[in-house]
Length: 235
Image (cartoon, rainbow, N blue to C red; front, side):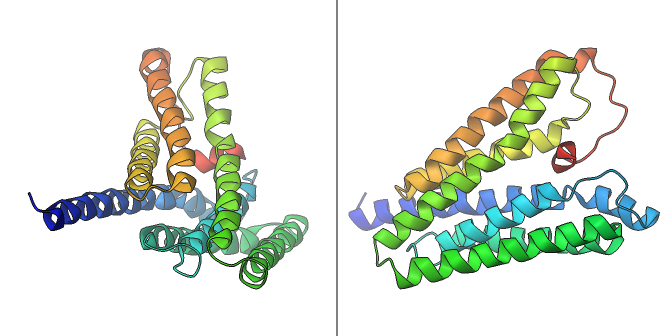
């Protein structure tokens, strides 16, 4: 096979992994919809927490910036998936603010302003102070830190499953989608030779395997009373 053919196959496989990651991420982005349907019907946020969506928005914004050509070249699929994620998280937060009581409304508004302010600082600092390739390194480390902080949710669920010996709050298909998404972006990062993509998603894939293994171990002894979205478990 010619060098051009090898390059073409390499590019196709790389793009396929990135597109698969985008599609699987969409499953995760829409998973909180049942929660917000309940909030809208009840016209109240009840005991749900808005913090997971704040964390998710910040993570999406930083990773979106990392995927932009001005920061990193050749990984536009990272920008696309996180731009969609940022839109979804923003919508969830707006709905939460609309139906929250006054105290939580003000808190969420403050956190939302803080997220966009912090993101603005990251953008300005990365452009004004850093030149390529140091700009990519700066934003890359921030994105890894942000992604690793998001792993608090799976770790919380893993601990809950082991403690309660129940998978009630760990829906199988959501755990499977999380694993496959992390695996897809891990492979995408390997193809792109980008450790800032492959390392955190590799960790996410390992956590996904653990969740699926726990599901197999405890699903027979569990009686699922409800199937809440993954992000809701942080409430």
